[in-house]
Image (cartoon, rainbow, N blue to C red):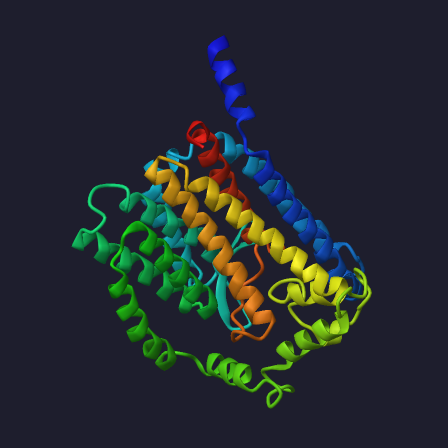
Length: 369
């Protein structure tokens, strides 16, 4: 009993506190930006300037408990429950289309309602892809034809279901981070390149009218500034008004009519309130988390843990890059939020859970680092 207790204490002491601190720092920054971006809207709509921050804080508190708990549970348990988790994830994606279970908003079916809470299945299901690929490519020959076919098929199934919601941005992000992870796992690069070339016209031909409008607005935003591109133009104005030093948190109350200011376009609030220096600081925080994690993962000897951790970081950073590119007008509007910063309970719970698993991977392999 004493030996078991000592082993538990030893494992606890091995926690990578630097990465743990960086994650909590990013979450803390996100909460402050969220308060600054929602206090005016929350006061007008709900009579409480802290309405959104209260809801987000609940998820942050739960997510922090999950983060700490998962950092203490061996990551190898996820290898054993990969297929049940993946199966449930697909089921949840299907349930969004079932009347009475799925919730429609703005013409999209992206949520299911459970006990009064809305859950967005596309957040946890992408971790399911990471689990599947990590398991498949650490068992046997990674160049096996059947294995490569199944991996490609599973990714397409998830991407197709997410696109049908419709959520093209998340669908593309799923394919991108999964493709990079496949390359790292030994998947034939030429197959992915051919698939990408063939997939582009398929995506264009299957786009809905509003998705095509977003592309036109991206190509010529000022032509459509009173229509589809009004959000992007409002984001531009936020960047310009922020300048180098910014106007201070919470100063720009009306935000140039910027919508989705606390979700997809929260980076525009950072630009307006904290300026260029704030944007650079936030992006450096993201870069530090990713580079530090990848450097530590390179020294992990367990191939499953290394691939699982790499998949988590790829999911995180690809989503962050796409969000930043959209807000800056470098990509068409996608609907992806900024990880651990934007408002959204399912998203923050999913990412904190994944980072808990990452912390455990680094902890259990610390003797090799």
